[in-house]
Image 1 (tube, rainbow, N blue to C red):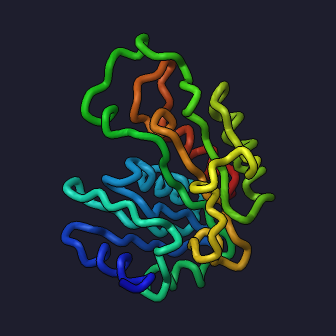
Image 2 (tube, one colour):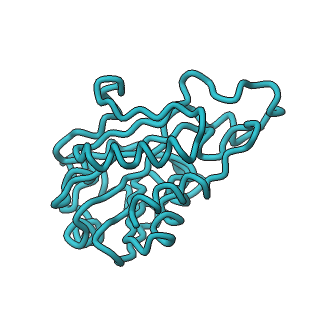
Length: 208
């Protein structure tokens, strides 16, 4: 299968929604929205609406969970993605990392777990490191105690978002890939709870 073939096949799957809203020259993306990186499309949409920014999202239905690497989301396979990338100058791509299926099916009492687990870090990749630094500052203020990592050497290679074909790097000014753990996406109990609106608000503040 060609590089763009697997993405084209995903878009043809029943129930998959490809969302495009053009506003300002800063855009938010959620390539793995819906049932894949759960809640990422919700956060990206809220941030875009609050900031008057553009939005591109691929939302998978509840019966589907395909994880296609971001670099295989090629604009050649999607006129909507091509239009989005041509319209915006910089982009914030919202992703999820860490297992979240358990937390979606059953949520134990919050007191069973510590406030932040060691693996629950926000990771900021992508090639626009100036933007990554700004996003890091906003998220540290919004999520006290949550580790926010914008040092590329401290981020696992698979989630650094540096591949040249990754849509986050295809705009004129590049972008930042925001990897959010389950707790920051509201998918596991915490005390006090993390509101996804808090995360969206911090991203929107940077965009504005």
